[in-house]
Length: 200
Image 1 (cartoon, rainbow, N blue to C red):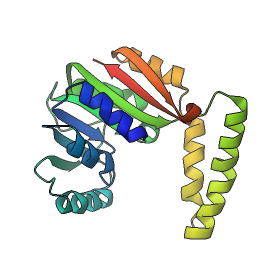
Image 2 (tube, rainbow, N blue to C red; image 1 turned 30 degrees about the vertical axis):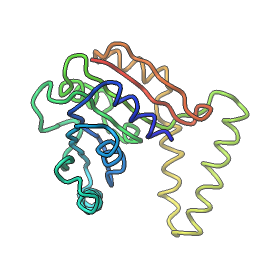
Image 3 (cartoon, rainbow, N blue to C red; image 1 turned 45 degrees about the vertical axis):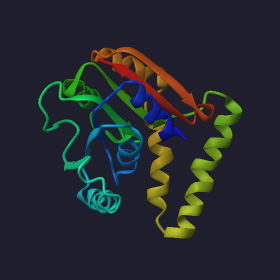
C-alpha cells in the first residue's frame, strides 16, 4: 500500500526518468516500470548480491529495456547534473552513512522542479500506538526472526535503526537545509512510516 502511494506521487510528478536509490531486489523499480507509463528507471544499490536477484526478476518480467541497474554509493552517483526527473528511496535513507552528503548528491542529479520521494519507517507520535509498535518491533519480531532464521542481529537491527533515525520534523529540516523546496510529508499507518516529498 505504501509503495502504491509512492507510485501515485511519481505518476502525478510526470517523471519519465527515475532513479531508485537503495533499490535492493528491485521491487519498487519493477512496480514503477509496470504502473508509470513511459519511464526509464535506474536502480542503484551498494549490494551486488541484491542487484543479481533484481536482474533475474527484471529479466523474468521482460523489463530489462526499461530498468538499468548500477552498483554504486549514493554519495557518488555516476550521473551528470540534473539527469533525472525524480528520485525515489524506499526504506533506504535510514542506512545512509552520511545523510547530508547523500541528500546533496541526490539533489545534484535531479532536474530543476524535479522531485525526491522518500518512504521510510518512523516512530508513531501517539503514545499507545508507539508502545504497541515498540513491543512488536523490539520483542516479537526478533523472537520470530530467531525462531525462523536463527539470526537475531538482522531482526534487531531494524527497530534499532528506526529508533536512531531522525524524527520527521528533523528530516524535513535537513531536506530544506540542503536546498529542497516545497518539502512535505504524509504520515502512513498511524505514523509507522512517512512519505517525504521534496521538490528541487
